[in-house]
Amino acid sequence: MKIIAYGIRNDEMPYLKEWEQKNPEVEVKVETKLLDSSTVEEANGFDGVVAYQQKPYTKEILDKLGSFNIKYLSLRNVGVDNVDADAAKANGITVTNVPAYSPNAIAELAITEIMRLLRNTKRFEDKQRSGDLRWAPEIGQELNSKTVGVFGTGRIGHVLVDICRGFGAKVIAYDPFRNPELEKQGIYVDTPDDLYKQADIISLHAPAVKENEHMVNEKTLSEMKDGSYIINAARGSLIDTDALIKALDSGKLAGAALDTYESEVGVFNVNFDSFDDISDDRLKNLMSRDNVLITPHIAFYTETAVRNMVTLSLDANRDLINTGKSDKIVKL
Image (cartoon, rainbow, N blue to C red):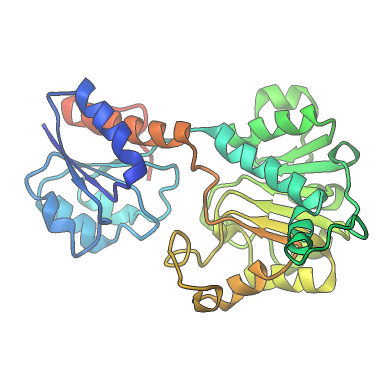
């Protein structure tokens, strides 16, 4: 059995080696480059492909995999919105993901950013760099006095609900598919508008499906409380960046924390020589604000999560090759 793993990073290698030791019957070829038109030929002769990237899995790539009689593509992440579903189906390619590599990782970053915004940590850090160690005027706020609105109560959203309650916050939530356990607790509101109007802090944990694209836009932002905060540790496409900037300029939003950004491909996880060299002007606009926190899609990036992403994706690919079955198959 032969598997090729694309886009393997140095931090993933220890877990890949660990998996190989436990699965000596499987030959794994490591490719540090991403799966694209220039590297897809390397998959010829393999039984399955494991990959992780933000770049699209295009029709060209999937057609080529199909021509190699490769029927199994296992992603080391949750999102499959960058997979050409029609091309995958046409080539008979089964796709798996890792639906829950570590809900805690994402939820913990979300609460970290909420606390940083409420306590003005970026402003204090900026002041300290210039030698200003005064308190005022950056007085903080307490989470236990706030209403947190969680949009999306899957695994990650559920963890965040529990964390926020531990801080004593009032928590409300919206999800078209309600969690029975949370529903018993009476935290759901009926519509997204209800969430926007009632929450002081809104944390997004919704998937990047077509109907959610720019779900946070000028209209929905106008419905939010004056001086509210928004957190996005889900998918960049959920927020209309131009509308977000306008809401920050007007003071409608008191702040924002973005771990995902709609134009992040080719920018996040790239080492630019300087701030001025960053190629995205809107991102630089946001980064330069003392009430906006930007992290480059690192919510998932913990030792626990990376281990699970590697081992669970390889497990899924192995199982598909052996049996054609996996509990992580994605319906495209």
